[in-house]
Image (cartoon, rainbow, N blue to C red; front, side, top):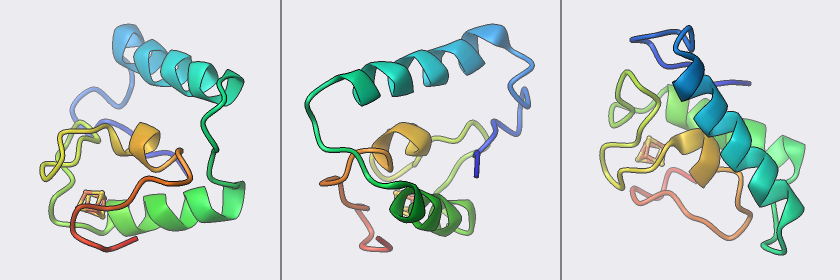
Length: 81
Ligand code: SF4
């Protein structure tokens, strides 16, 4: 699952590259990552959430949810996951 910016639909290369580059950096790092099933479950919750803005940012914490949800030990500020 991908949460695509509803404003640019990731036609903005800068937006797309920012998310993808950061995800790649996280995967190469030492911070535990959520497995695919957990990641998908979290993104599904975010995609249904009223706090997700059109750019894929959580308005409660200010994070891009595709990045926040990728880290295993992160939590949703509203306890949705
Ligand atoms: S409040 Fe939680 S579920 Fe909603 S967008 Fe933010 S992180 Fe996702």
